[in-house]
Image 1 (cartoon, rainbow, N blue to C red):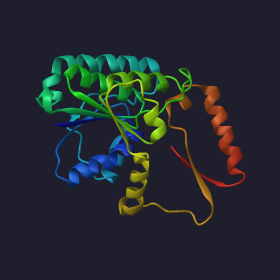
Image 2 (tube, helix red, strand yellow; image 1 turned 120 degrees about the horizontal axis):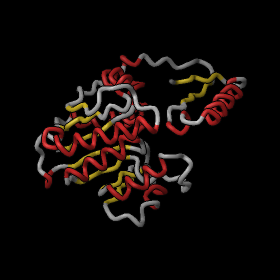
Image 3 (cartoon, one colour; image 1 turned 180 degrees about the vertical axis):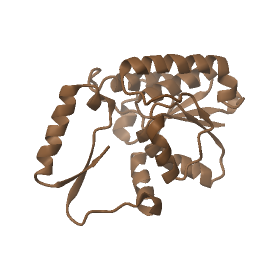
Image 4 (tube, rainbow, N blue to C red; image 1 turned 30 degrees about the vertical axis):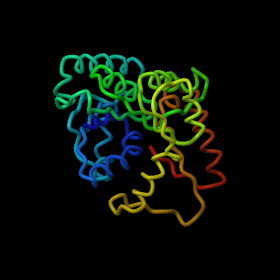
Length: 238
């Protein structure tokens, strides 16, 4: 059984092509939603025609701070320890794999869940590094821990593959980011209602945690976007 663990909007967007292909091929998978972005993720899921989650681990407000993340992480790990069989649908260790993505709190949680269950862990968008533990933080730390916990690495390029030389396991070069596949799906799907401006434009988003947890960083990014907007139209995505 394939267990796909997702928590954030960005993770769902980037994993949507994988989940859609599994559905098209009739390959069953267990969709586990950690609830990190529970309030805002369901519209995206419906737009991509992805099935409803099989398991929702948390039903509270979106996790937007480190203290709330620690409480959330502790509660879910306790749930995994005591309800592992129901969460993973009584899957056997020898034929189960946990699929995680990126460098979020849910990535680390998914890797820990897979290890606790005794399953193989496969990391999508693996091998990305800044080589600065504090920038971005805690994402860079999450990446390193996730590398140690994973068995299979899907890397978006040879540079990412090279960053994993000291880690054992299977490295697969996918050659590009799954975001490209998601973008192509969105452009083809009528339900997204994508309208492309007829003049030059750029797209801006500051959803990542390191951009939001520091007021000075947030103000710097907003200022930069305002400067760019004086020269080209900016489509700002929340």
